[in-house]
Length: 189
Ligand code: AMP
Figure 1 (cartoon, rainbow, N blue to C red):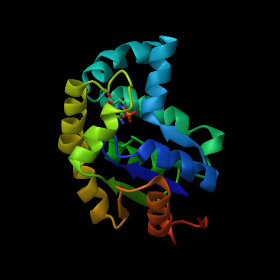
Figure 2 (cartoon, rainbow, N blue to C red):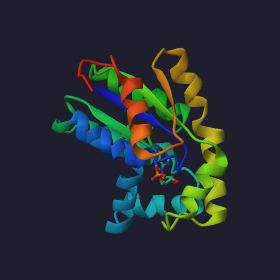
Figure 3 (cartoon, rainbow, N blue to C red):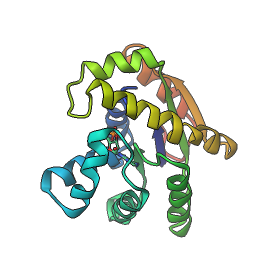
Figure 4 (spheres, rainbow, N blue to C red):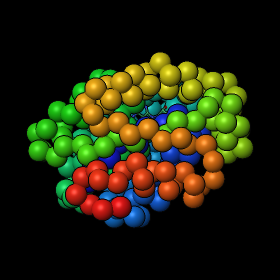
């Protein structure tokens, strides 16, 4: 089962993704987590990525694609994975299609968490991460709208999109996600 998880920063995507990977028993591939780890370890990729992350901009596609291609090739991803925070641009989505086509591993579903802007801003303001400063939040939301939201149409056209209302309690949203993914892929959720 291969799933892409889409949603603006502060939509609760990371928390719901963590629950879903437990249930699906597949690796959780969060490009944000991978980048934060690379920054913390001071790797060359981390050093290149840090200024973009600090200002709320997207890290260039070549860095992200190299990182994801490497990770997807690892044996634990053979049976599936949950992609969280990737793809974030149409070129990334096209590159992912090419990577997966080569491995004959199609995507099963793309789950979009829909959350209103005021709700997202309120959640981010309470989270306390380094890139959760008001100006950086605004830039990250604008990057999402400009660069990532076009993926809703991209995957909609391919019949893969399942959109879920992301406002509400954790259990309530989790139940909506389970219902939206029912019948996707071969693994029952
Ligand atoms: P996240 O934890 O997914 O909100 O990501 C935190 C930051 O990492 C983002 O604001 C971007 O700067 C960077 N980032 C994470 N994933 C990607 C991606 N797929 N493409 C470009 N930049 C990314």
